[in-house]
Length: 268
Image 1 (cartoon, one colour):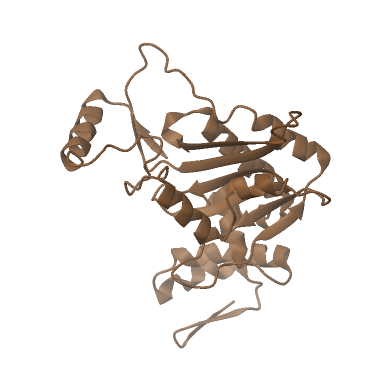
Image 2 (spheres, one colour):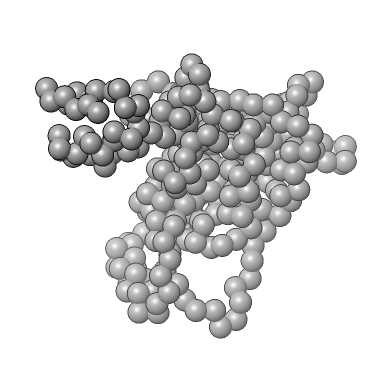
């Protein structure tokens, strides 16, 4: 997310949006992703659940399941991951990381991990106020926020009311709003990442945030901790553009290694 504070920029952006969207109903700022898609619209919510292959939060509630989950849309309007903490009747609580179907390919299998009672309680505590809103401070400077993330946050929570044993809450929030929803979304990715050691082993310098790391680690298999180390090292290859650059990755190998590139051999 990029933010610039400028009244002039704010006016220019408002004028551009107004002229482009004068023929249609304006989208709630909390609902619009970077591509101008209304993420609050029912059809978009159904499309998103279909991408991940998950039931609605109401279906979770009807099954007696306690759930707190966040759908993450990155700063370019792309569906990234879904993090869900789920407790089904008669089963241990777990965290699930779901991936959307991309480019018509088979959907990656979700990752799952057990959740301890202290972590479950921590998630519940941090989710307590995500659906509230902050009141802007008087005299706050106007700002423009670019490429912000958008979060769909949902909860199905047990209550002590026998007439409504499970309460459903939902909120869509743009990170530019700096509201309690985006605070909870960030907290949830912080909590989830360490529960998947191979994901936490990725170098954070190569990824935007914990949600991006949880997305990147879906490609790891076998000895996933070792695979994470290889993936970290492989980032060095992105800095190479010519055969003559091969020496720049020599430090990744032992001194007896020979690097072959386009028929040229480099050793020593």
